[in-house]
Image (cartoon, rainbow, N blue to C red):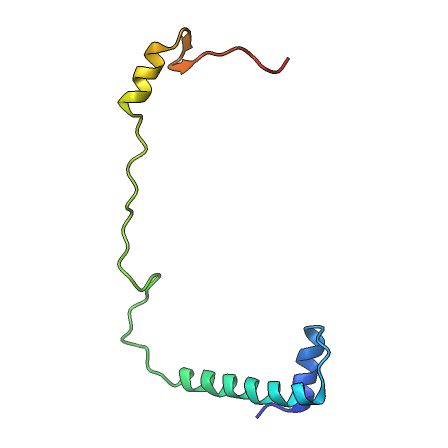
Length: 92
């Protein structure tokens, strides 16, 4: 089990002011967390495949292609240059 001195040191590093009651509570909580981590270290994961995501995910977005409507809009513009609509300058 983690000691009160270690909890006080961790609290000092985190810039926390803890009461004696809080120190005892965190001592039990941190000890439980560390015990669980020790259990996890014992689990055999040699047969486990590495994953970056637990679900099979695919890209559902459409390709970024110019729509025909955009081409029609450019055709209707009074002035164009290099397939862009030419407008008056707003900054001088």
